[in-house]
Image (cartoon, rainbow, N blue to C red; front, side):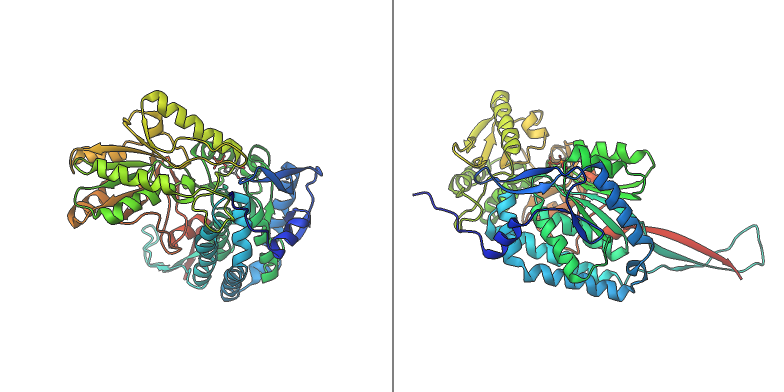
Length: 500
Ligand code: ADP
């Protein structure tokens, strides 16, 4: 019998029953055009909410509200300590609504409720708690200077870290709440104000977060949230002359459009883009952890992770054992609606995403890849794609070079640990993450140093922490998320020189 997902809890039902609007200056508004668009449950294909379709006019109003909040009012006059406490309170409020937010996320994105509850929501709270500490710990320095053309004259010079101003943030659908949190927390910690454009596929949890921000006492206009589409609302935000900086997470393709839009007035840009990350298993690795680790590297969040370990490289001699192990795990993964308690993998986020993954499966087949597991779309309602393992792949194949952003891993063997392996791993336009499985410390450190990626995981994968910087080399992006490093994205350094 097909298991019915449990009924929605009262708090989520109540949230969904009210009109989903745009947050500007602390108030909720319908779109200026009056238009709305439907949001779907990817497990069933049914509409769960109608959401305001923000566009240029709404972005205009939101940027105005953010500018006003940045220049005057209680936000710029708030002490760093007060700002820190506010951020901490937001983290607490997220945890207090853990069940509700996890349910909403699962409903909207398709991911298992258990995963949203164990990962997405607590990690979202964590970045606010972590960033709360930075508000009081960002400071300038004094610099001894010796101006050569004014001998004998004394100067006192120092730097001031200042917020960059009004920030436009554009986020994707794979971790809707967490991406909002990763973006908002550092911007608020540094004293910026924000216009956040959430993904059209998954706007709900960020709207609930918007309510919690107001409940926490965030001054009006400090965070404004606009729902709407990328080519309209997103493009208007990236190009808006009143925005000082754009922070974007999404595809490399759209990242390039963001850079072009922002080039008009040279606003600052940070980008967290795609990946095609190598996951390397050496012969001496502990296969009891490496095999499930390799499966988790690609199948976590249905492969809809920019950091997914989508290129598996296995040393000759253990290749068959490893790929069979990964394929067996793939075959045993239980697909189902995210809200069913025994679901291990939910649907992909949308019909468009399902078709995109399928087109890559077709391409792979035509290129000569063989499917050791999966490869099929589940018929019936919902957007389910089987976790798939492709072998007989070559490095020049599209499925090995292009980001699929679905539960599809390509596996290849390599001869031995040498520079060819490094070249293989680095043979990509991307450079977001990499995995290495080995018990040989020397090999682990050597590879970790030589791989061109912003994150390297050794004997683990997809380990994230608010204190660890995350971001890409090459076409995987500009700048870093999280850690102390992300504060750079939102800070201007001013040098002040005083003649004594
Ligand atoms: P994905 O492939 O994960 O959907 P996208 O890069 O298409 O990633 O989308 C990420 C975010 O960028 C979404 O919020 C989307 O609405 C937005 N977006 C898409 N196209 C544009 C654009 N031309 N300008 C600005 N934002 C865009």
